[in-house]
Image (cartoon, rainbow, N blue to C red; front, side, top):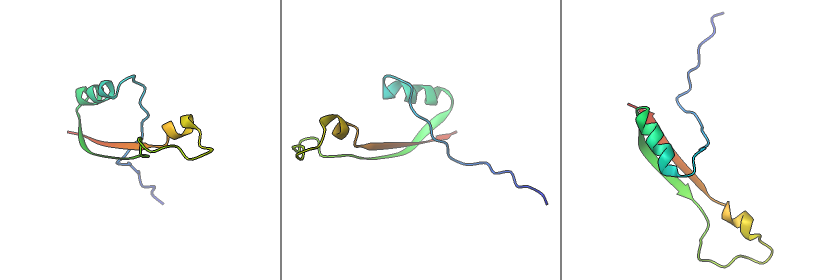
Length: 70
């Protein structure tokens, strides 16, 4: 039985840069182009609910950026 070679079209990377712009510049230098993005988060101006830790609330968000190599 022949095994199929699976080549995923996506990869997940975690940024190791102090600034998002540094990561984007590095990707651009390697031939990548951003094709989309999305994000979600909490309302920053809203008061915290009783019992919610401010540090926990600070990390309660999600950002996604989609890059393709040209």
